[in-house]
Length: 56
Image (cartoon, rainbow, N blue to C red):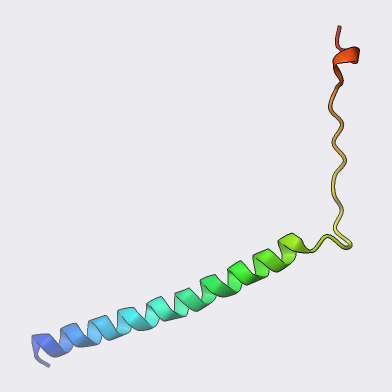
């Protein structure tokens, strides 16, 4: 193989990897948004903050 052929093959492989990860990232973002916006059946911890009246 010539250097130009090796370089072209390298860039092709890099492009394939980028596309694969771009797809995975998109899938993860979609899943995160779906899970993050789903409030049904998700337990939300109760938080109680001390009021100014109870402080000494």
